[in-house]
Image (cartoon, rainbow, N blue to C red; front, side, top):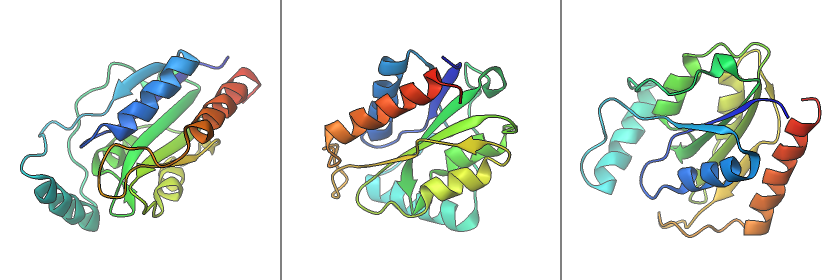
Length: 169
């Protein structure tokens, strides 16, 4: 199996973290959470509004160093919630700080019914990487933590990731 790292950002309900942990449990990959240096504060709506401003302005917040370096891995699964139809700004910071040449990226995202262009944005940002096994997972459209995407579909995706890593990638 190719050496895989799962990198994710998760904020309100931990939905992206939940999916990242499911993938990690099934693959045995190393896992690292992207964390901003300055934490988001205020109500849910305050953070939603701040997130919209950040996305609109292409803001890339400073992030804490991760325990693992993407340079040491062949395959990097990248998980993000949808923030205004794209990836969370912290994920953009992470992606722009890496050299993707020769890597394989597995983009996955969580959303409340508005997937936007997150997967395409991840693929476009990871220049030089090959993208496989992309996945969109929908949760409760009211912002909750109930997964709307059937669990069987998520399990099929995880199996396809495992198969891809076990083959040649």
